[in-house]
Image (tube, rainbow over all chains, first blue to last red; front, side):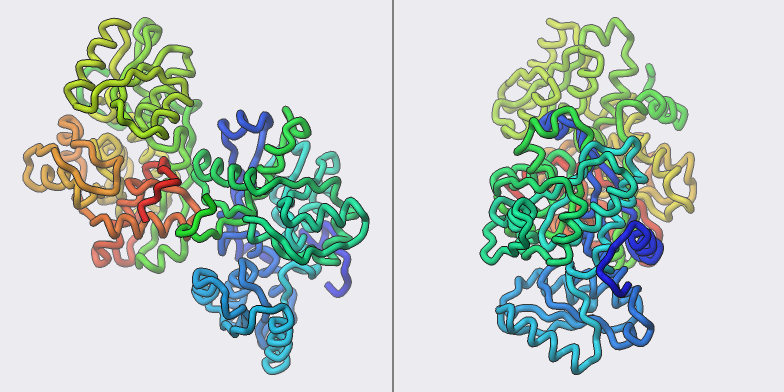
Length: 317
Length: 317
């Protein structure tokens, strides 16, 4: 894919490409959570995805879109999160290197996760400038292809396969589809698939109040990437991507936010009621439903649990 | 059922009876856990069962085996654990009371769980004698039927439906089937179903080293219920039931144990690798496999995760 458009066809092609590498994740529900939320919720469990996050979808699609020559030289990214682990796993299937630039103060658990999947880590200073220059040098030296975590059409098309599956798994279609929004790859991809396959479903981005650049950008019509996020949902502290913003403007109905107390409450509900480990970022969809009860009362609601990678020695409660 | 025999027919009848009240739970696996364990493990996720534990199976079957006259007067038990919540849920379907005798020092979380399912709690002193006399008085006064947590053929037949499903879900049959053993209802019921449907599968009870009365009883041939259990696996501190012991002797191949450090390690592995909340008792099957690597090397292994009810504010690590 060589332009910035992402269509249902691209998402369908991504689904075929990645099918043998990622899980078709289950959709689960909870009677007790429905009773508390006052609506009928169906959760798409991307916490049960490979590497514990939807990021496996986009990373695999992007790797599988490379030419054989590009693939042979490996892939690279700067990330301390789920995208790095996903890219390392995707590269490992083809026995090519995944070069991961990480800040020298990255948590040991994240370093271990990337290493477990075979990623080759280069540490750098913990500044955006250091990350970018280290990555650039690395790509020049090795010839590796940079696979960004969200601002890339192949990555967005890959993330959209989660909604493609949801459309097959839910009958009738839900009244609402909510996904968390950080960089915006998951929301953009899912919104494109959802609008094409379930045109009557309202697509809503769910964002922490302490990192609400997507909501501010969406409501003002001006891209306003955040600079100082403050939220327990560590996976959503990233600034909204520019390509993602334009796709979100075109395909999303609303962006709603929830505060950290509600996000933590929603995380606990899922752990205790559904016996699923989700990271706080993954609970933001449910938190938004709980924070806006009249908006969703009595409705059929689909929510994407984005991931389950959380340090179980340092829980947020 | 009016005698103490439990056969495949009883378990099949239980499965038909409870089908609309309990979940057919999924079987999941983890590449990373397989790599660590050195075998091919398939986990039956009873942590995702109604009330978060396999106990929903036996409680529903026992309630559904009552006559309409018995059912109308309600059910009763003494328990501070998953069986009490399961019985309360089962009774709620028929709008009959579930009387639960609990020690006055029972954890608030367990009291809340029983109340959430509509159980009517009577508190008593925290001794076995007080529990039994309080329950007896209560049953005399109300006419409620006592549904014991494990030492009862209808309960055992209900728990055995987990293995009935496993036999349908796994093809080919596994070399080994492991379930935790506390009172012995799950192991006895699953062993009967497994021996009938998968005769070449070795059935193994998994027990904490600090509560190994089933292993001592099995190896000596003498029922030796424990009196002073000491293990993190709180669901398995119960003494082995007498009926359960006779069924286990007849249908189980071996009982193996694991220490608490291995049980905690196994619990953490499942939380972090599989994103599933399981209670330490549920991890004992995996702990036994990790503690006896040569026994299971290269084999196809089925393990029942018994439940996921754990206080997430007081984790065992």
